Image (cartoon, rainbow, N blue to C red; front, side, top):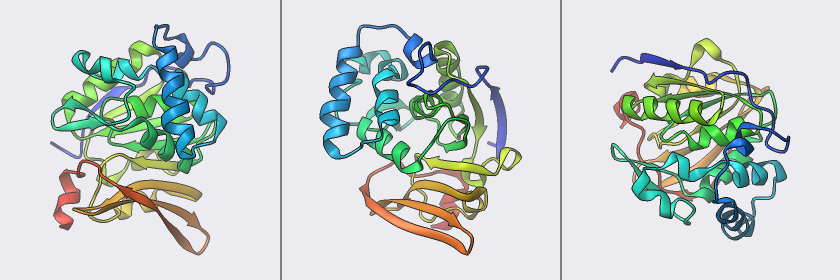
Length: 240
């Protein structure tokens, strides 16, 4: 697949933050609200995520809409789930923790590398961010774009290798990567705004979640905790 294979489009006008009434997140009516509230209380708040905007977005975005039908009974369980093509949707806590670490706010321009099911992108959109998302597995990119559009989340999705980021829309206030490269891709570092944050799992057999913050004199690196993500494929594998 070429580096930029297919632009799948944007679902429309940027969403208001999750706490506002009438957002895309709250518009998706379903009977799983109690399951989401329990998920947030027992899996996310209990582990220390405290940003009220992130917690509200996690309560509202319908996670079960982003998993295959046979996995929907387990959508709010405390573990990742398969979504096909050897990929997974991350554990709810990991999605919330990465979102909080990125410090995403309304109107911020955010890049996601690894669209997967589209769930992380929906959470970012529910926070009012302008979201661009790249997915190397084209069928997943097509499926995620359709789900996001159906649910009203205004995310621009592109099928291609996210190692190079998305220079046409850089710089970004935040970049979230949902697959682990052996080393942090230099193009992603370069596409951060001053003060911007890159949240990324790094490593091969041993992986850790890392936050890079762009400062005037370089990049500040902070290790968060050990993680286990699917490996970043494509150009990232040339660095092994």
